Length: 410
Image (tube, rainbow, N blue to C red):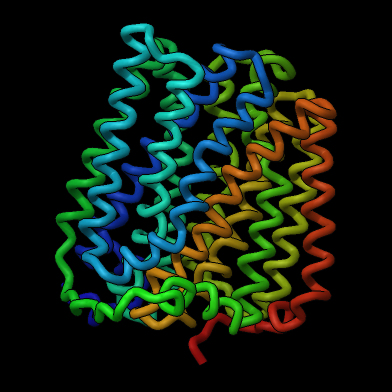
């Protein structure tokens, strides 16, 4: 079906064949990444017993995303986004195949693990902005906010199932996890390259400093977008306790790999539930204030998780954390996509991903460092307190964001 036509009901989203292919590919690649993350976290902590090393895993993913961000925008705006995404997923499949081979043969050590994770980070540096930039061309403009919520639900569905599956498969060893993740990455590559849409050839303006930094300049010229992106950046950076989950699972809550899988899945349970609510009941009023409230709730949930000694209470806190996070994600992504011209989406999405996508990995590094310095629980508590402080400060720094009432194009 032509994405420019059709019903605007929620149920109609997956009737748009291009969006259905995209949704399935998004599920597959996110599922694979989450499974891989569980195996890498548990295997890395088993190899080293070091909170700092867990932080290094986050840093190994952050650096390529940060260093390649400006190049990514040019690639996404100049080449077929379907092929770019498919190639990235193929590279990820080969990388986890190397993890599987190294684990099976016994040659994979701490340095090799970090090197392969860095390759995955480089591929994801291109994949994330490309997938974000694809969405507006898959559905009618009237249902774009719902499509963004639907895409978020795809990611969160995988983030629920992936860690649980990864934790269970780890019982058979890391090789089994990596092999399954590799098959899923390959499937995602085939799906996304199979999307059929009317594609307007991009205008390939000469590469210059102005074009390289066009995404940065565009975001700086929109205070509401800058405020939303930077708010999420610092909230995730300070509240990124997920790097510490292997320590919580193994040393504080006394569970095995299955427990780590459930802990990693818990935020996605809350996020998926909230994504489904938002897909059926989109936010219509006071979205700026709602975003600040969601970030504050994210910080409170982080603190609750940090001090919990009960496995069930920890799961509950992480569910609330995930639900609060997805509200912020949907509002921020809708603002960025609605206010960005298609010719600029690659470069803006690349800067967006540099701020948001890399903040997850950099937040993991920050959590690993502070945990090594101050202890696991104090590090997580400080992160939650810092998130709340950032929310209050950003309310004063970006009043334009707080005043946004709706996500309508007008």
